[in-house]
Image 1: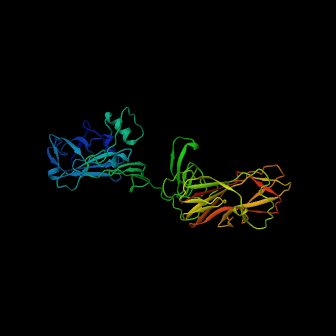
Image 2: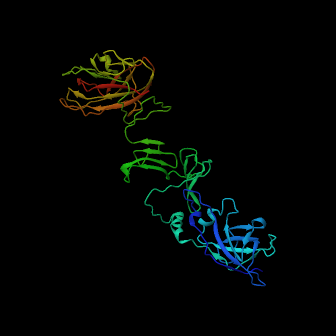
Image 3: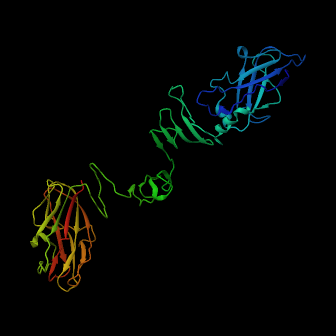
Length: 426
């Protein structure tokens, strides 16, 4: 047996093994000791086969890493003393995970008495590894428990530009963020396929996958994405649709809608549109209509005036209260109504669009269209509009304003705020 007196004046164990700095650090451990012959007590010399092992406890247990040095790679011993750089015979040195994932390590040195790289005898006791004083700052930085930085800090990977070397952030054993050497960033995924890839495997409908905010208040939130694919812009509580935008949304090119368009209020400030108004009349100009079926107002001979027409090639007006659509497509038809009764009677009327001379009321309100109540003579009716109707129309369609009173109207009059707007949706 070869007794040994081991001492550590040359031990330099830097915690930078866990996180290399900007320049590459050799991940080795400097260690020195003293060997004597068991029989004579004299110091030994020459090359010795030795085995160096790291353990997580002072005695017993299995090693977490080892390196043997035999034959030509044996450890030189001179007058009993030896100095060795443990890890220098292993590709890449001592793995960073051996150090960073453990709170304490012990080094065990074993010597082969016969120098045949077999039958190693362990020296006792094991030596606990401790960091040199000037590596304390590296220790707290590598464990992320504390960092005092007065200037810029850079974390670099792939410094040799060989296309390898990702930056990975973990909490415990779980990976949280990865920056690939190609520049892709993954949150929740180790294999990002986009410049920024956010993955939430197993997320349910109530899980938030992404939130973008300009501040901490709810009114400052910009975008939310939930686990079931819902996206909310300008709102924190979407109504169950996949995309909800709370605020004006501009489409500067073609908007294609494959399904139905549902709108409580449809507005267009850039689209093609036309608007016409009924000419003002100051007395009982309506006469006695005695209607029992839907009637196109144009058939009553009233005079209409053109308010505006942004696309004469799309819309034309014939002066009788009807608009002709010259291009096939989807259109918004908007009706405004403000009526003045002449007789002292509590009558009511329904109105809706007239398509090619026939009323087309559904799906708004009921099949009878929109109801307007009449008030005693000299009173304005309540302003109950505008009302929107979405229709897909072929070229050549005429659009007008239809009405049908519940009872025969003795006399009635109109004001200029009875209007018809048509907006091209696509």
